[in-house]
Image 1 (cartoon, helix red, strand yellow):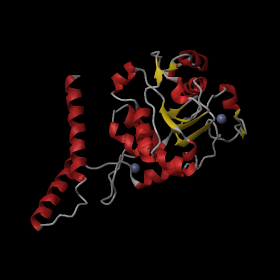
Image 2 (cartoon, rainbow, N blue to C red):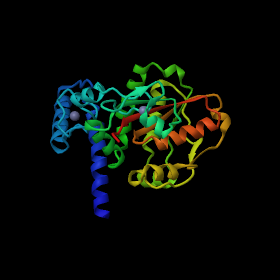
Image 3 (cartoon, helix red, strand yellow):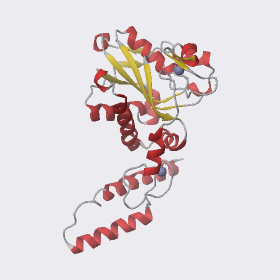
Image 4 (cartoon, helix red, strand yellow):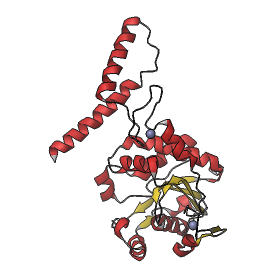
Length: 278
Ligand SMILES: [Zn+2]
Ligand SMILES: [Zn+2]
C-alpha cells in the first residue's frame, strides 16, 4: 500500500512538474541555444509524460492546452437535452416539466428555486468528475469551475446572486479525500465572477452515510438535520447560489437549501456540474 501511495504521489508531482514546464512553451525564447534546449526538454517530457485529455484519454494536439481537448469541451457544452428547469431531469417520454417542475421535483419537494446543470452525468464530463473526485486530481477544479462559470454566464442570473455557498463535506470525509470537491469549484467561480463566497457558515455537522447505496426514504432520513447554519445573519435576505458536483435525487442539495431558507435566505439557486439519470 505504501509503495502504491509513493508511486501515485510521484506520478502526481511529475505531472505537475511537466505542466509547469509546458507552461513556458508559449513564451518567446530569445537565443537560438535556449530555443533548442527548450524544445529538447519539451520533446523528452512529451515522450515520458504524453499530454492526454482527462475526458477521453487521447493525446492532445500540438496546439491544444489545458486538461480537456476541444472535442470533449464541445461535446460537454452542447448540452442538447431538454431538462426540467428545476431538478435538471432529462425530459422525454413520460417526463414533462411545468412551472412547478417535473413529477420528480414534486415527489422530492425540492427546496431550491431552480437548478442549473452543465450537462447530464455521462461521457467526458463524467470521466473528468471521476478523475477529480476519486483519483484526487485537485487541479481539475480549475477547468470544471470554468465550465460552470461559462454556463452561469449564459443563464443571465449572475447579477441576482449575493453569495456562493458550496455543499459542505463532513470534516472526516474531507480529511479522507483531501479536499471538498464542491468547495474548490465554488472558489473558482467566486474568483472569476467576483461574487462573495461563504465556506464555513453552512456546516455539515452529522457524518452521514454515503447516499449511493440508500433508498430514497433512507437518503432523506440520512441527511435530515445533517446541516446547520452557524450565523443566520450572514444569509439573511440573501439570494444564494449553492454549488454541488453531481445531482442524483437532489435530496442533499434540497436539505442544504431548506436549512439556508430557514436561516433567512430569500432564494436558493443550485448550480451543479452534472445531473445524473435516475
Ligand atoms: Zn478529450
Ligand atoms: Zn424536475
